[in-house]
Image 1 (cartoon, rainbow, N blue to C red):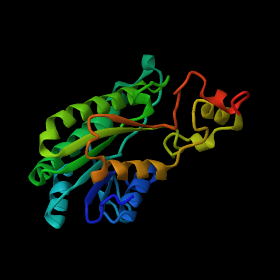
Image 2 (image 1 turned 90 degrees about the vertical axis):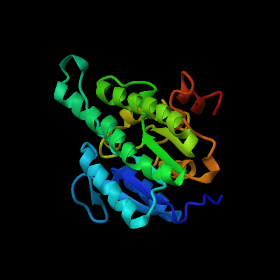
Image 3 (image 1 turned 135 degrees about the horizontal axis):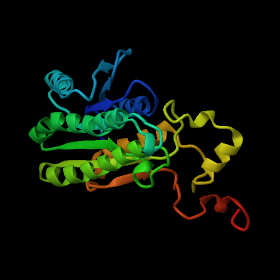
Image 4 (image 1 turned 120 degrees about the vertical axis):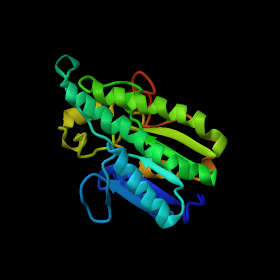
Length: 248
């Protein structure tokens, strides 16, 4: 399927590694011009702390001046905070929201005028399956991703008249350095995979493929929703049962 992403200008945050790097690679493979943002210094990546509205506005202005357009924004940057609510450090809670929610606000606010000028745009914000079903010991992360999902729906309503679509996406169990799924022992891995209708880990490339579609003209009638990219996590009460008799 031709997605028509050639010559589109795409900004991807948190693009130095993991899912973010795969997303950037996926758009480049479709012929898009990709600007990779991440905190700190890395080859091929522009340094930008999304918690700083000033830094975000500066980078977006530079991209607009260089290319004359910004067609797609992918807000992939995020952090994971763990620990029970009873003992959660308020500073860690706030830091999670600063990156995962306010960082998304900053980038959206910076690119919206550029997209309005073109009367076209795609904004894709990373939520998580944790926004659908929260995880014990990860309340800050789960709550922040639920906030992203609702913020995305609101933005979709505010920007639809300008030809701009806004969606969030919810990856499930894709092993990354942040979640350390690849380090689980066999029993823990089996328990996790039994939660999935497609009983295997997801890949960063599968997330990238979905986002390339959502950013294309082919997805022009999809907005204001959260796309579940979890392999059917808890689609039924016992997803792993489909891999046992009498079904398999």
